[in-house]
Amino acid sequence: MTQPNAVPSPHTSAGASLPTFTGAARPYAGGDPYADYRTADFPFAHGTDLADRRLGAGVVAANDEFFAHRENLLKPGPAEFDPERFGHKGKIMDGWETRRRRGSSRERPHPADGDHDWALVRLGAPGVIRGVVVDTAHFRGNHPQSVSIEAAAVAGSPSPAELLADDVEWTVLVPRTPVGGHAANGFAVATERRFTHLRVNQHPDGGIARLRVYGDVAPDPGWLAALGTFDLAALENGGRVEDASDRFYSPATNTIRPGRSHKMDDGWETRRRRDRGNDWISYRLVEQAEIRAVEIDTAYLLGNSAGWASLSVRQDDDGSDNSHGSDARGVGVSMWTEVLPRTRLQPDTNHRFVLAAPVVGRDVRIDIYPDGGISRLRVFGSLTARGAARLSARHQKLGTPD
Image (cartoon, rainbow, N blue to C red; front, top):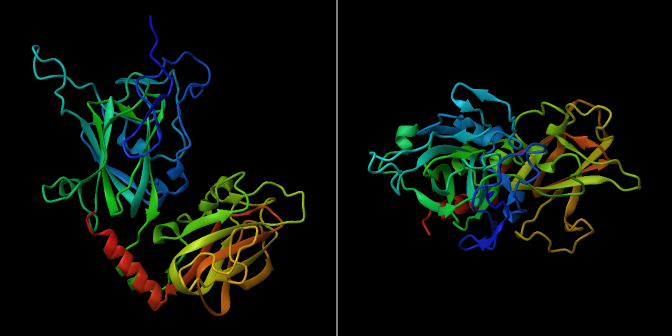
């Protein structure tokens, strides 16, 4: 019997030079199930996953989930595969899998061209989408033939029925495109608009293991204004990690995720230094703000927490990132002001600091000495008039159709 081809296809998706995969992968033959998994380093995948369950994302509805539940789409981490795990309905898969579609009659046993299954996804944080990964890991002969993805911006907390109403405007982000089984299928997105929900379509049926939606958080200025004082660095509020000295054990972005860390690898930990340097993370706040207090949490970091930490702020009044030269870290030297001097940290402890005086800034950098890790950083304050105006202008622009 001839086996299906598992080699990446050389063609690219429309509008982007990205590797794509088509066709089924080879049947599982034992051993490491990821040994023949097909993937690529997608450039947009370094952004925030707007569909991260830990940000509050959810799969609110699906027309079919006969073999595997829709909620699996957004589970953190790669899909798992147990070749011996079967249930009453068949093979239990770590993903979303629908039943096989059939035609309308014995004369027409095949599904019609437009027949497809769908799932509605609420993003954990509204934002501008830069790329999507439709991961069909372990779905080898039961993956969809093609997928398409649409997006909408709907205020509030709409129900599935409200999202499916005729008056909701859906924008096509990914047109109907062939995908491969047991592969990470990536799609670049160039639509500069703010979205809150996705509609993921698989044609005509099949299974998808994971969905990742990478982009930039675009918070609601009205909500932040109502809060007044809030965490300016938090992912859900539009903060982001700009750079870090080390990401060996865990990503620096963990430090601005919602809630407290629940285990050691839910924070940021660096490798052990064997020199006289130190480790650091630089952050971009949601906008220019007046900073009044910070929290540095080392939860679940015991023998590997940072020994000391200091915090610096950069004003960035002119909107430029680097107008006064740069050091080896790629950040402006003369623009950084230390607001928290080097301070001893305790393991597994949340440290709270009220600044001696409010400080205006757009960027924050934490330096830890000499290495180790922190689990969370919180930067509390409120937007300046200039920061609030710029955020409102961007929000309005992102709501305007192309």
